[in-house]
Amino acid sequence: MELRIDRQAMVPVVQQIVDGLTEWIVQEQVPPTTRLPSVRQIARRNLLSQSCVMEACERLVAQGILASRQGSGFMVAALLPDYCRGSNGSEAGDEQHGRVTQSPWRGGLKLGAGVLPESWREPDDLSYAIRQVARADMASLFNYNDPLGLPALREQIAKRLGLLDIKALDEQVLTTAGASHALDLIMRTLFKAGDCVVVETPGHAPLFELLRLHGIRMLEVRRTPSGPDIEALEALLQQFRPTALFINSHHHNPTGSCLAPAVARQVLQLSRTYDLRVIEDDVYADLHNGSGTRLAALDDGERVIYVGSFSKTLSSSLRVGFVLASDKLIERMARVKMISCMGTSRFCEAVLAGLLASGAYRKLVQRQRQRLSTDRVAALQALEDADWEVFGKPTGGLFIWARSPVADETRLRGHALRCGVQLSCATSFSPSGEACDWQRINVAYACDPRARQFFRDTAMDRPRTF
Image (cartoon, rainbow, N blue to C red; front, side, top):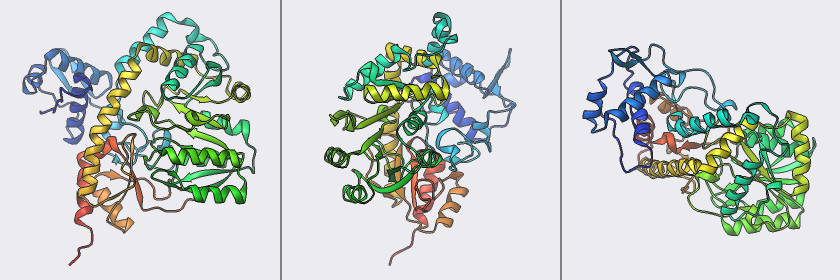
């Protein structure tokens, strides 16, 4: 059993052992109750300490992947979790909006998934922070939250925004239960049924569905590798006079593209000329390598409403996001928040505040960025070798937007099915439901052997030229 441990990586060795053992069980389809080699054998074979191997095995027992028996060591659990044995259940986020619904393992590799794989999650720091809050902060266990959110967390968020050159006071920050909740509060506060807004296409399906839920009409502007098509945007503004623009600044979902500085300045100029609010969705900010250009950092007229989230990086279950806006707008949104849901979870916010204050969250996203950077380089090379067309070649974030040389969608999906890969629905990323032959590829899944084989198969199937 070779685990391929990288001692230069920032991912802890114990977590790499957990990932390696899980991958071995899944890809080799190891039968339930199969006994593993002894801890000593695994450690010796992979030049590891027995304590690291033992800790990894104990974690897998806690996750339900392994079972332990006194005197018999560790064995594969009799009933594996859904994500290891295939499931028809859906996951949160994009996967609940008609995308991919099966497990990333035997049920099919979700190449277009909108989140990090479960195997990438690191529970130690989060578990410790949860225990600390449970032991020492009884108010967070039982009491309602402040209408604006936990003061300690809002202070930490304001500090982090300062690192992005975004000026923020604590009272201008409103915490939410994730970015979707933030967008919902913005819509409830600012818009009414029949209002008209501009959205990017391709774009984020849950945003489109939320706008439809509120009866808000969408105008589509094409996303380019440097941001929205400025000429097309101005034409829409002149003709329809929409009230707002929803835009991703960094690592746009699904294309992975970032807003170029020149385009950002043009967007703000148009917002001033046409009295347009700009809702800047920057949920992948912590997966960006470097500072970059944010509309909120350039804005001097309180036209930009900035949305962020920690759910993509820390935990999809620990729903914490935030909105940065003017004092008056935050006050209005806080009233809507209290009426609609009585506030956000003080417990979740206390856990996150502790992780931010201790530096544990900063180290976590640093490891994620490094791991994604390595996988992104490999994924882009695999796509290039298979003659896929790549949109803009992203330098950070989760996604690559690419088009296969196989023009026939049925044949393409047939290749994917044979390789155990699931692709996103062809209409997923269009506000109007228009089919698209581009694919959202999650970097964290693209180096899986099934994805590699899928790319090779599409290269072999491309039309020959003579």
